[in-house]
Figure 1 (tube, rainbow, N blue to C red):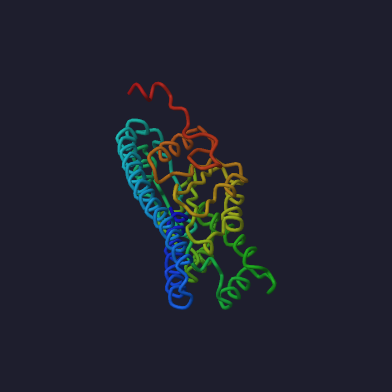
Figure 2: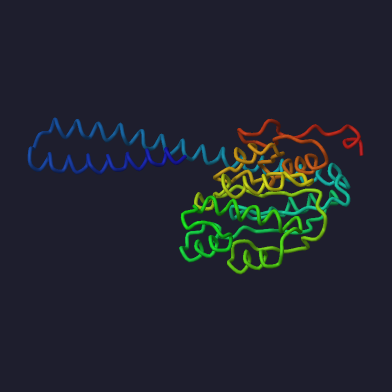
Length: 297
């Protein structure tokens, strides 16, 4: 669609240039042959212009129709979701880590709740994780007692390890206070509850917020030494996907957790169906196989 509009804009520019050429040609040269040739060229370009406009309108109509079909399928899937996931994760305790500035999909939380899982705690990675401020960079280096030439990427790995300690209830109050006072991470909920799993919600629409190779990778690595299961998820419309980085850590991933198929996939992955689910090129399957007894309920 963007290329088509660019083509139309280019044709408009050509029209204007040819019109100016006709004006100059008729005024200065007075050559009727030249003017006739330019008029014929304009007629051809004008025909192409209207053809492209018509094609654009057709594409808009088709896209609107497809959007409606997708919305209908999503509504249908949302209707099927409760009986498919109900009580599949009873007494399952989760920590949620929100990275990349993502909004937590309400549908994901609803699916987890229907399944019987409880989000015991949440850690939200804040904008200061970019460590753009020299003053903040110095405070972080001083806190971790590292050299002044240690890079921001390495410091984010230290911070990731600290987040892992907090959400598994192994951090001292000084560490928590430092992370929150410097607006690096915001913690909420009860970190003292023993966890069954950690969901890392990644994906971002801003390349400057993409720390998947440093923070998220190190976080998953630090959590891997614990007994909790780790699940990497993101929304289907994330511009910069974290899936390639998540999958380096050998964890289950879901790339469309904002949609009901992705929410069902997450519940089944957490119940014991590991895999890479979703609609992006990094996915290996659309969804896990649904047990027949679930379909008969």
